[in-house]
Amino acid sequence: MKIAVLGSGNGGCAVAAECALQGHDVRIFDFEEFSTNIQAIEKAKGIECSGLISGFAPISYAGHDIENAVSGAKLIYVVGPSYATVPFARAYKKVMQKGQQVIICPGTNGGALIFKKEVGLDFSSPDLIVSETSTLPYACRVITPGKVHIFHKLKDGVFFASLPASKTEAAYELFKEIYPGSKLSKNVLQTLLQNGNNVIHPAVSLLNVGRIESPEDFFFYEDGVTPAVGKLMKAVDKERMAIAEAFGLTILSEPETGYLQGYMLEKNYHTGYSKAPGFEGINAQTQIDNRY
Amino acid sequence: MKIAVLGSGNGGCAVAAECALQGHDVRIFDFEEFSTNIQAIEKAKGIECSGLISGFAPISYAGHDIENAVSGAKLIYVVGPSYATVPFARAYKKVMQKGQQVIICPGTNGGALIFKKEVGLDFSSPDLIVSETSTLPYACRVITPGKVHIFHKLKDGVFFASLPASKTEAAYELFKEIYPGSKLSKNVLQTLLQNGNNVIHPAVSLLNVGRIESPEDFFFYEDGVTPAVGKLMKAVDKERMAIAEAFGLTILSEPETGYLQGYMLEKNYHTGYSKAPGFEGINAQTQIDNRY
Image (cartoon, rainbow over all chains, first blue to last red; front, side, top):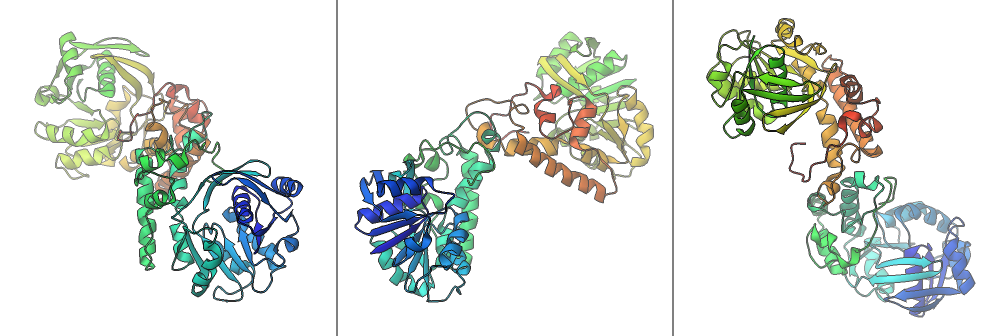
């Protein structure tokens, strides 16, 4: 199957590499301002993958021409932080082809809704199925340009839904082939609410502002998640679950999700995070103006 | 003049010592659970004072019998943290004498209102004038039982008002003799709102929770007041001043006050605090459950 990946960061490289290693014809696009990985992949004609998944993943196109990347692709992965969704949607709008499917991976905060709006379609339109996942299915880092290290691939706790919701099961066929541990959500509101970043990152950051702005480094999870930080995360999570409930949706608590995803060994808001093998050794941000 | 001091902590010892050194007949009371300083003062028949004010201050009574302490006193200083106001008021109620005046030093959060309510008088009653100050007029610490070190005496930025407000000027006559740099407020709402602790301590504590709960010590002001902490303090202070304005009162900003009091050299919310000579070397609390 022809697959296009929009985004060449940590996640984009991991998605592209695994799809290619599973035998798909993969093309990767990014904007010119993000050329480092694209150039390295173009030169090597592939991505070197290490860690949990390893091998050389051949990539048939890596460049800044989105038409080249998406033309003829059945599936288009949009992989990036939330602020990348709008630019990718606007670029894709010009080269969109009938019968393509898009997966925002991860949806972060309503990624499928934002993407569909930006390409100029009604949310309920069946002309383009836009799906999203609740989280990136990997813990991964680009270690040198064009080389990605996959620390962990989530075996569970990844949720998937499409817009329109009636197409979720059909769209899932293409997704589950590569991510078989993922689960269906009722709709994209559920994948949005199942994203726990809003529960974890702001609480840890807020209660560690003094430390972030200080010269000493600290680990975001091991040092940053103290008992009171855990309490705040728990309180925020309670609100998130109450919001879901008000919409008639049942979502998992954040520690339950992290446990299913394999990041954590304990289902609690304090040591669940500070002693999580999957969150070890991650430095905290060094300034407040940070995407955390 | 006969003066009673209720409270034998850092502030109580400083007030008692200075009043005694100015020639007044001073008696000091505290509850039995706070006996360390009381016993030392009783034994030495006075307080050893060092620092900005130095000398041996004779104290004519130090003990747990409040009647002994306040009988015949013209002026009664209530000196302690805010949670001490109610117990002192309840104890004083039983031995209250006509013509006495009370000064809650500092009023902290409506100390005069709380005291007057607890002794069973209407706020407007002229039977007992209860005054309060906006802050403790000293930076001081008891260094060993019965010995107080006065780092700093505030020459300005201490505000004074009475309940009823019509008696403020009359009551001030007794206060200004010892604290001539203090200023009159319109009423006790103004002294309450002029207390800047609510602006500083919660902001610094909140944004340093992770650090407070970590094993490493840090200095509350030098390390704890980073640029973003300063921004939060500024935002809270803006609200405080807006509240005062809504009541028709004009209060000073917190850095302006700290500058007048002599703690700070700069009138800003960041380095004003982190580089303040008067706030140097103060360790942050080591747990969240703390009166800060």
